[in-house]
Length: 253
Ligand code: URA
Image (tube, rainbow, N blue to C red; front, side, top):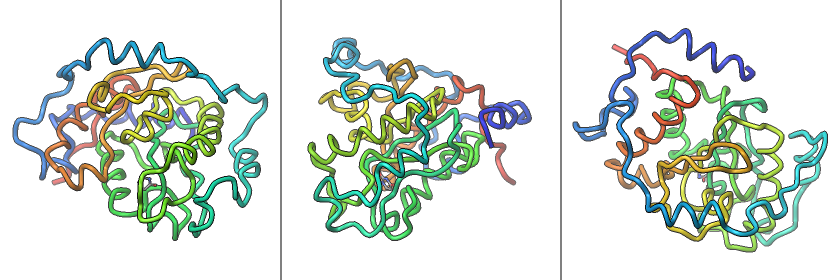
């Protein structure tokens, strides 16, 4: 489904926006915020330092006529960094190549490494619930990661690994040209914003990535460890929904 299908899904949904998505409601605190409630502001200085950071567009020049297929071909059976020595499958990304919304995670975990698909493990199931709570289906969005190979023991990818792999992510985003990018966790946010600021300084704020609105929120794996943080994430996703003209999924009886 293309960009139009998201709009269509949003328009056909006539339900009132609930204060929290049904799929996540069970574990959210009672005082979860209503739609449109503003999030606590990050410190302006932090945001400014991100927006003004040098090298924001480094290695990210757009390639004329680029396609997702070409990017995947260029990646090949990549051996550019040490992660190739322990990976099983490259996890390039999946979903709608013309999506209005792209989710960017950190890197594949065990299940993703086995299947070659992003976010198919426990965190992925939660991400699917989040997407559906937004009134979308997984195949309407695009999902990818900063690094395409699983870091051993699910450690955070190292700086040189991110540096080697992130140009492919930049190209994916350039090709898809979504209306919004949601960074899931610090690694994705740092890779796209070229910042070292902690995520708490800018989480839930609209920022700019090469002319596209970008919002960073907590990673689903963090939410599995800290369920109360789901309320904050739902506030963030409501901002994204407002931007895309989406209505939350109707609660199932
Ligand atoms: N965590 C990520 O960041 N990406 C995945 O694909 C799976 C888990």
